[in-house]
Length: 203
Image (cartoon, rainbow, N blue to C red):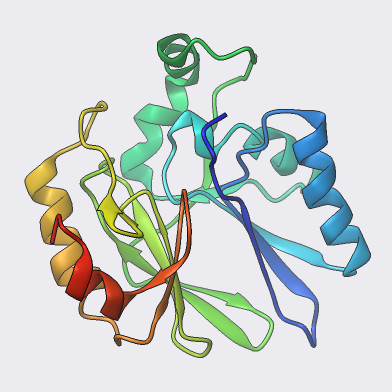
């Protein structure tokens, strides 16, 4: 109902993989991801949350239990994980979820190895205090969570949000990436850094 994007990032040689923002809220959505993982013979090494808003973590506890590896996220969003029930109530969601705990802390500059490639953690606070982006220099893409969208930016009216901080994060941390970098956002269509530099009305 949020149109949230869940990404499976994997190495086609080693089959090592990461699930980013597991926001599946029902069995049908879970089956789509599970079938993709099974059909491609993937070995899930990381469960990563770009931030801990409820739409991005509705499948996090299930996957944490299934793969026994826990959720990786920035600790500045820990308070959001402890307030999942409040977030569910805020959006009147027909789901029941326990708290989402961060087992592996991610910090700016950390590198997550996935086969022969890496995902570099870029901290981009503003949408939430602990929002991160995941940049693959080898493959030329960045997963931006809800910081940067095609033609838009993340909302800043939720707890911990701050507009000036978000604009600064995008300008200093994301728009400095190569123009050809493909942007995979938390909602909506993919874009490129160059396109957002030229045409994003918020920037």
